[in-house]
Length: 219
Image 1 (tube, rainbow, N blue to C red):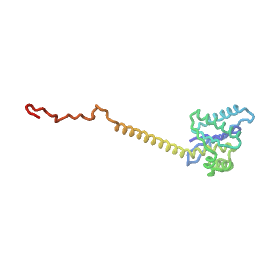
Image 2 (tube, helix red, strand yellow):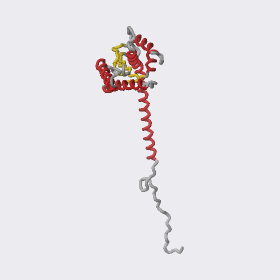
Image 3 (tube, rainbow, N blue to C red):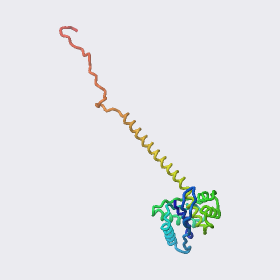
C-alpha cells in the first residue's frame, strides 16, 4: 500500500509518501512541503497548492491519499486556510479516482505515538524511528504528512473490516424487510372476502317436501 499524506496549509502544505502494510516495516518514498507566498492572492495560492500536489501524484502514483481532518480552532482565519488547502488535496485525488481518507490530529498522534495529545516533537521522533530515518523531517509539516500516511496504513485494515460489516448489516436488514413485506401481502390476499357467484359462493338449497294435491280426497 502506497499512501500520500497531506498536512494541509496555505503557507506550508506538508506532503509525504509512505509504502508498506500494517504489521511490517514501512518505507518512506518521499517527503516535502508545497509552499505559497503569504502576500499572494488566495486564488493564486490555491492554484500553486494544486499544482504541487499534482506533481507529487504524478511522480509517486499513490493508491490512497490521507488528509488531516480540519477541526475548529480559535483562529478562524487559520482554520479557513487549512480547510481550503484540504479541499484542494481532496479534489486532486478525487479527480484521479484515488480514495481519500480523513484522519483527525488525535487519531494520527495516537496511531504513531500511542498518545492522542502528543506534541510535534514526539510525533517527529516516532516518525523518524518508524521509518528508520537519520533525523526528523523538517519542517514539522513534513513530519506530520508522513505521520498521516503511517496512520492510514495502520488503520486501513480495521476501517475496511468495519465498512464491510456495516454493508453486510444493511444488506441483511434490507432482505428481512422485503421478506416481511411479501409475507404481509400474502396474508392480506388470502383473507380477502370471496365474491358472490364465483366458486365457493353459498349454494341455493332446493326446496323439498312441497305439499301435493290428492285427487278424489277431501282435505
